[in-house]
Image 1: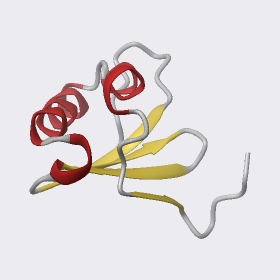
Image 2: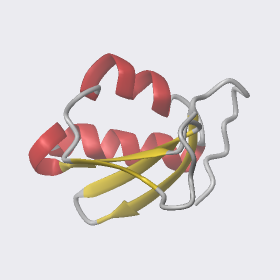
Image 3: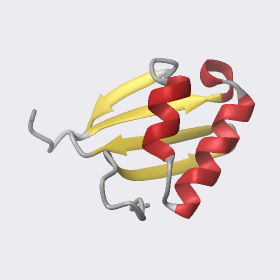
Image 4: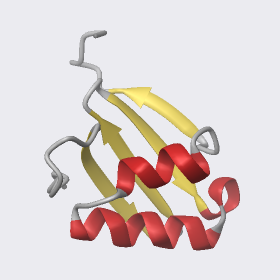
Length: 81
């Protein structure tokens, strides 16, 4: 789902939410998966809520869960930026 980016300056482009996880796609084309196991259930729930309202997700990630992802991937058709 496209991230609403209420601030107009977020590095987040899109997200996908599942039970106990969130995938966050950044404007550089990389997608990171954060799970209850990797980032903590409370953090994942907070990230899901921020994604839905379209505000604060990038800041939360950089301040609280930065490297606590389980997977990092680039879409096959994305070129490195």
